[in-house]
Image (tube, rainbow, N blue to C red; front, side):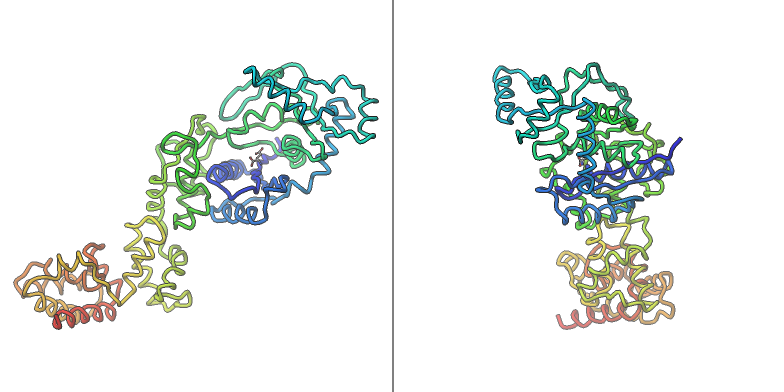
Length: 480
Ligand code: GLU
């Protein structure tokens, strides 16, 4: 059997949105799982609405998600002469004909039918024009479009998601292949390119399912074997209405800007319509490739729930090594003057990675992680009012802070176990509970009332910074 070849064919009339990204992902998964080829084709034939900026955004979004393609990007517009040639061949073979009906006339007939509550399809007025007369009229400059002559019968295909689907041809009109300005229509270009690129499987959104019988007829008319089709289910918002801007961002890039992890986004998109066996949810792209199978893709609509996406981002954050997270927050730390990528002193690098490890289990997005790590890195502690009220009170506060400072200063080994022994020992000597030193310690170094285990925090912050922050609080308390 020949090698599987799939394609993703976005139109650069807008940014890559989540529906398109899901289509790209499923093509990618299928290609990688089957050892096939993933082709990228930019369908830029709508010159008015297509822009280079959109194409760039689409490619950037795919790269961000890690969906690397094997061939392309091919530009559909480069094949327009080839597409036109195919239509002229069909014309020569009597499988298509020129239609000279003025668009206004067609519109009037359609409107009239609709006023009577009827549908309308092209009534084949121009099919009765003889080929010789048709040529003469074209040569005389009468404007025309080229229509495909839909044969009698019906078309049936086996969709990998929706199963057997049949459409009777009398429900189909003789659709246009070339417009009166000579430009090929979507149906013609897409089929010509899929034939030329040897596409074996077309994986795309549900919205194209009604186009499929027309396209199958075109394949056959062009003497090509139609590919196998898989139409992915619709994506809905949590209110079960078709996903739109009303539900929040639909552009993939917006999620990158929000600081969602790419691995989480791709995981989330993968589960929109696909159910991996065994209740698995959190998966890497490689694990999804391994598990992917169209038997797990259902035909009922999938729900896009941003709360779930955030949850997944948190889960992926937890599993991502600190060394991989650091480059993703360097810019945000740099903007606060706390880190430069050149800051590669091994001790400092180890410290910041330890801070990331402490923080990543509690955060869901990169800006949240950066904010947390900034708190660990900065010696300028801003004390939250709530933390001050709860933990910096009592007549003996100054004495407790001094005991804390001395206990920490006496630690030979700056590691969690020794720090804990020292602080607990000091509390006992003072005759107070350990909490009476631990809470003020947390406020002194981070300015907040809750954090991961304080001794791990102190160890990550390091001796010098910890002492500086505790001394600052001792001094401020003495002044108060
Ligand atoms: N360019 C079409 C679109 O963006 C896709 C065509 C197809 O996949 O057949 O909807």
